[in-house]
Length: 269
Image (tube, rainbow, N blue to C red; front, side):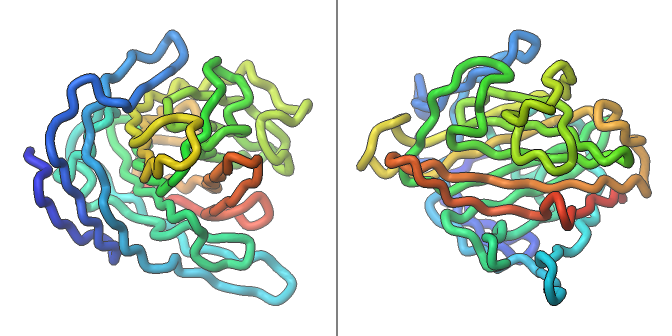
């Protein structure tokens, strides 16, 4: 499908997508664990996103909670790649803009979409980013110190399974106590493997200040069985998603959907 001049509105978020030309040897790259196939990246440039704030519920003395996301079933299987297939993702449920610590729309803007099917949880994640900072190249390395997104899935035993991915596709995953901030917590077990497949795209130059990189995108296919979740309608997953933007000077700006104290919820439809 041609992306040139494509204008789309979905789930209350207007996204203007434009592909000026297919870029041979695109600057987008992907690194992944040996078990994951490398995906070449030729993808659209997202020129603008007008995202409405996420719906929140505030309770005195507690972190703001977010509404459950009712996840539709995908009509077909997806092989994650750098290509955003509008026909596939058109009916996905959307977080809208992730939230900052005050419960407001976080800057830089980021959002996620969800579908499920064929035993997989599908996630499409978008992040606006003017300065891409990514240095880690090893599976299960400290991905969370770079620009990255982390998906946390909470278990009944007070633990959570974390999957962190950078804009270049470097993945780290493991099982941690529910209160762990990231996979760098010494109590985390990095032996657990999510078997997640990812496809990535990013615009700009890594680790170069002042070139206005624009954004990055990641698509996930995560086996539901790896999360101890039944791949069937009615299954509920308590989860949180957070994205941190790493500035050149080391400062971070983060947005989230759900937290360890007040997890969000996915409900398979």
